[in-house]
Image: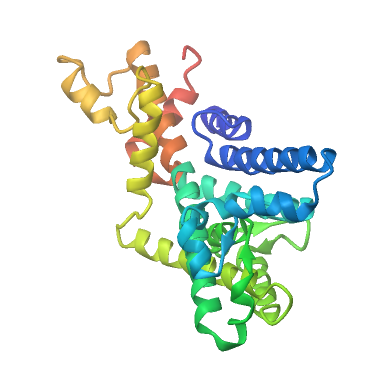
Length: 307
């Protein structure tokens, strides 16, 4: 119990690669930065159209293929931008709710890949829909997409696919199953496709499909986010050369570097080192991925007052 408390505290404080806190920070900083730029334009007497054409439109995703060809990076950047504070707050609340559960179930290394894959799927489906569906062809000339909703939807569906029976709000009749909340989320998107934000809701549904496919592949042993995490680790290590590589396992250290020491001999300094490795594994992959030996070591260590 002592070690579980320690792990949960690290997640809550956003330490040691908490992807959820990092993603929330990126969304908040992005919003503040672009609002600051708009404030400068406003104070100089410029109209919103000038700000949009000179700043914002270079980062939002256009459905017009001719415009998209001049700014292809917007397929990626649009998912980190919000104009309306309520849009940001809504996405942040959904992201926090589902992202926290996802990290608890699968560790923090699935969250950002899911968000990016969902955002890319939403953006590409939005472009295809506006250029292939006759009912949207006229709007394709000027329509743009902005916001993190497709990525958040991907996380929500992936979390539900991993643990549909997970209960939230336990004070309400023992809790609401996660699948019920997600179903409401998806049904509302379907119902509002014909409304004023057709492109946004189509992107949400594409993000939802990507979240399901991601988990489906994960259960078959194919982690689509692994290459992305390796890239993040490589970039991080460039600026942090002393950082220990998380891929270095306990087996390598204890079996090949202990020089004759029994791997699980209860020597305080080695036991503490082993525990730290297990906690790192929890932080990276989640408690459910521990082996029985690792769980037993944590249990014994929590009962040892000398550690």
